[in-house]
Length: 344
Image 1 (cartoon, one colour):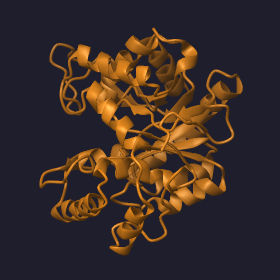
Image 2 (image 1 turned 30 degrees about the vertical axis):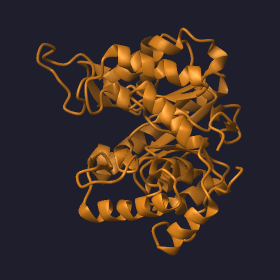
Image 3 (image 1 turned 90 degrees about the vertical axis):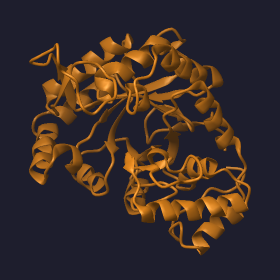
């Protein structure tokens, strides 16, 4: 699997490398990372030839964007493509001396607020450019518009209304029409949201994190909807937030929290099939999504230069067709899930 092959997003001019880099972990998702380590990780990815980077104002309340910008603004602008997200704006907290957002181990001391209106989208976009130190990004994605983050169906309906009648999506469309961005996307963590977006909007791609991995393929039907519309898919969290990196153990992270015993047991069975074929579990997890024709990139979130090198090695690893056949025969992968073929 060629990690550096450039793939087109939908019908746009936006191209991404098949192996990209996601920025959530560099927002201090699980621990406060030294700045030198964050810088070295991004430098290693760029130097290796990874050409697509994705971040968000939400990741560390702006820290991820600051870190990506610190490195990428020193590089030739045609050597990378960059996406960030909209849907939140950050404000000074009421008590700046004691404020600490509970969602990040580190992160910056600003309070996030959801805002999918035209003004909110444009403010988020301009604040992101300032944090990045760059005057353009290739793509903007609508972020966390789902029941988990909006807390209720009423919250989802309200935010969709802001995006629609409140002018948020129109603001994105105007930016694209003027050539300020090349593509519009939406980040999806739960099944059910892709159809709702497609009812109202015409995004160029979805960034799908969790509903389609080697461990679970519940989002396959929605990927098929995208294929019918020539909408591309970028896969975030290809390791299912950690459980598919190495031999699964009790307490391994799945969906960003300790996995339930049945999930650990299934992951252990997948690991056993991979070991039988002498293939690292992580290599199978990283390459599996490319079986679907709509998937153009996977974006794991390394936090060290060594992790960048491992991702590259796992992308280069040849995986025999028999491994995928065995996973289906043992009902560990859906029988209708497309799988990569050697040489693709």
